[in-house]
Structure formats: structure tokens, C-alpha cells
Amino acid sequence: MAPSRRRFLTTLSSAAAGSAAVISSRTSASLGSTMSPSRTPGSVSPAALLERHPSAPPSVGTVAAAQTDPRMPSAAEVESWYTDRRNWGRWGDDDEKGAINLITPQKSAAAAALVRSGRKVSASRVFEPEQHFMRKSPREGGAGAVVDYYGFIYHGQTITHVDALCHMWDADGMWQGRDPDVEITTQGASFGTIDAWSEGIITKGVLIDVPRHRGEPFVTPDRPVHGWEIEEIASAQGVTVEPGDALLIYSGKDAFVREGGDYAGGDRPGLSVTCAKFIRDHDVSLLGWDMMDARPDPYGLAFPVHGVLFNYGVALLDNALLEPLAEACADEGRHEFMFMVLPLNVARGTGSPANPIAMF
Image (tube, rainbow, N blue to C red; front, side):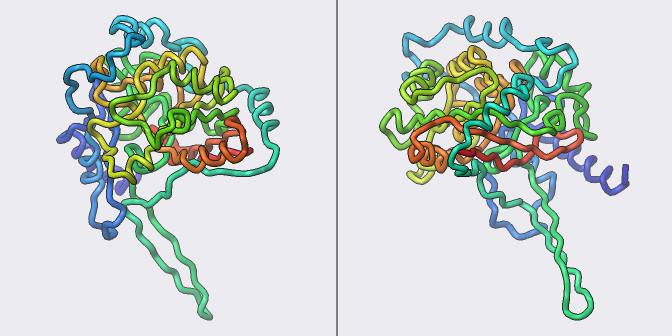
């Protein structure tokens, strides 16, 4: 390893050891915080970037009034979803692809058959790196070229990205029960890394438009999205969520923020843990969302819905921009399409920025 890279990793390790983002923690992983894209180049160090990403959600208080729905499961039921129904060993003890195994060549070919008009919609937010350095190289005769350097942490709530299976864990371990203290070091991860999906994720996508179904502009803190509501919306939209599908849940985050809502690391609207049962029942391969786990969680879980990553092996497409896709679905009169997520082939990586494309 080059000395410069070794120094960089040492810096990261030192910063993490002094913050809540300690990479060897067995109880939490970074969900990130909003970072301003307006800083001048060079004003933020990798250590400072890490310190901006608190690793654990705020402490959970009493159950919110909105969570007293009689359909809410008991704590024992919720626990059973994430213990008795784990996918560990389902595709072999050393499997690193998880639920992406459900996307067979036949599944991808069937998704391609959904393309009729050729309309393409990106589900990626604009990517503005925290650090962006430019270097011009002049050539004889007035010619020249430019190269640039990006410095950023893509996990969090600003950049559209895919979480690899090694990104999170609980007290029982990461995907397949592996020990994060063994599998993850400052040199990178050695199991469940993003390059396990280097061939791309191409499958049928199904968008669940929660605001349109509710007749409201966005999901509110007092009414998280529930698994049984996803079922109802899918039926109303005339779609069926099948094994290997990419489930995209649009909750109206951008409209929420435009109305003055604060969507960051504290209490926030989003998906209830009951969505995890729906995801497991339907063998979803990828979950894409604009709002993530609702907080506070009445069960006190650190990762209510993010838990599908390390328990079920479901890929997570975080911070997806789904408002344009919801509009396209309404225009096209259908909520299923070919969906393509192509993460970077990063060695030892815990995830990757991505530009997901829906094609009608």
C-alpha cells in the first residue's frame, strides 16, 4: 500500500476512534447528516467529514400516539422477523450477494420486456462532492485538459447510494452472522462488499406512491408508512410485488423539505418496521426510498427497516430521488418498469454512489 494511502486510512481510524462513528461498534453504523455543498475546496478534512456522521439515532422515548394502531405487532413478533426469518445461509454460508440472488437472468430478461416507450427517468440526486479539486494541464498550441478530484462520504442523507451488505449490523453480527470486528478494518471490508454486485442490479421495479394514495403531499411524522399500507397501495395501483423485484417507496421527502420539514438524523417521518415483514414476505431484492426509517421507533430498534440489509440481504438504495419517477408513473399509467442500479466496482467498499435508471 502506498504511504500516502496508509496515512489517509490512519487519519480516518483516528477520527473514528474519537467519535460516535467507531467502525468496530457492534450496535450502530452511520446514517449520516446533511452536509453543505457550498464549502470552499480544502476546508474539510476526512476526519471532519466522519465526525459529521453520527452513528446512532437519538434515544427512543415513549411510543408515539400514531403507533397505537391495533394492527401494530408485539415486540416479540418484530424480533421474530429479524431472527427466525433471517436469510443467513439461504444461498450458502459464504454468500455475499444476498437477496440479489433472486434476480436470475430470466428475471432480468422479463424486466427488459417492460420497456415499451423507452422513456428513462433517473432516481439520483445531484451529486455535489464536499471536496472538489481541479487541475488544468496546458498543451502546446493552446490545447489543454482538466482533471478533478472528489472527496466525499456517500453514506448519509445527501448522496444517492447503494449500501453493501457489510455496511450495518446488530449484536448478532453483520450479514451471515459475520463479526464486523474481523471483517472490517481501516483497510476496508473483506466480506459482503459492494463488488459482489459488480454485474449490476437489473430487475423489475415497482414504485409505491404513498402521497398520491393518501391524497397528501408527503408522509408526516405522525403517520409512518406501514407494511399493510404498501400492500393496499400495490393493489390499488394494480401491481404485484414479486420475488427479486426492486421495491421503491416514494414518501415525498422533497415536498416535505420544501414545506420547511427537517429531514436529518433526529426524529423524522418515514417507514415503520412493519415494512420489513412486507419485504421479507415478498422476497424483495432491493429497497429504494426517499424517506428512510421513521423515528422515533416504538420498539427501540437502532435500524428498524435498515435491518433488512444485514438480516435479509436486501440491497438498500438510500436517498433516491423518487418524485420525478412518481410523476412519470402517473404519466405512463403504470407503476412497474425496468430498473437498473449499477454500483461502482469498488474493492473492499461498503457501498457506492449510483445513478439508478427506470426505463418504461
